[in-house]
Image (tube, rainbow, N blue to C red; front, side, top):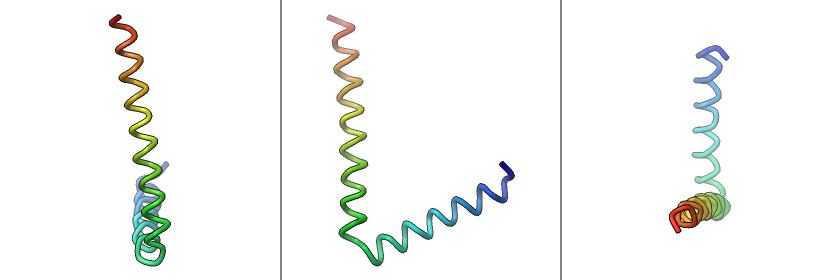
Length: 55
C-alpha cells in the first residue's frame, strides 16, 4: 500500500476518534473499557498458559 494511502487512513482514523470522543463520550468510554478488558483477558490467559507450562 502506498505511503500516502497509509497516512490518509491514519489521519482519518485519528479524526474519527476525536469526533467520536467529542460527540459520543459515553460510547467512546465504553469502547475503550471493552478494549482494556480484552487486553487484560489476553494477558491473563497468557499468564495462565505460562504458569501451567512451569508446573
